[in-house]
Image (cartoon, rainbow, N blue to C red; front, side, top):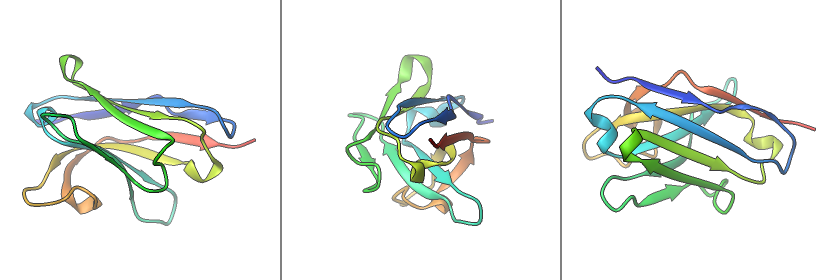
Length: 124
């Protein structure tokens, strides 16, 4: 059984910051995890990925320099720090776990376990 749950979304103004949190249960937490986002009528978009071990990370070009992904293994948590938010960052953000073997993790289909998501709205 693997459960993934996000929190921390909300309504903010452009330029503000938010920190999303993800709690994961099960042994998959010790492996690579990621964040995706989705707006209505569009496909899930890769945002950030963090690996196990040395905690190597990767960010999408659209958020690089503004977002940071981190993890706290002692608490089984992954975080997405979002700074200088823009209206185009508005979306439902999902935490994901359970990367399929031999997959990069950049595609939504690469992941087996999804949280329900948390809404982030950036508007003046």
